[in-house]
Figure (cartoon, rainbow, N blue to C red):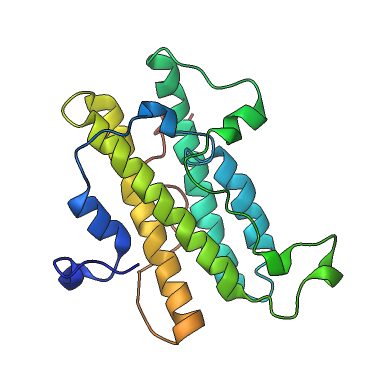
Length: 210
């Protein structure tokens, strides 16, 4: 999905467009939208599986791994805040994943089977990149909603959600770049680089030498 006409000068990034025009109406499900899938725990599992099937594309694997590690950092950032607000993490993992606000980022059908021999001849990296891109776009929608619900009401949660949203928009740009070249042969540079840890959402230690 491309940006609208007003946002086109800023680049055809759905995440940027969505963030600029998001509604102020809270989602009726409230903060239950922040589920295991989107706060990073469930996404880490699916991204690991998608990354492992990008055989022959080591650069794609590297970028997918960066997104996976940053999504895991989102979980570490959000979990304490859930308890600060009087909530808790579900004891049952299935229940946790069942609350997902986004579809699971599962392998495309052409990759599913009991082993490598079952992978369809038509399977290619493009299909996996499409799954990754749609997962990031759903994350953008979810965290934009959390920002809308908390802006001016809960500064701490808003700051957390805003930092995560910035990284999700960057992830979207990474996969737009890869998919544009893989599928269309077009260059849409995103400026990805190996940065070691999530720049906005990683919890900083007071003493880095500890």
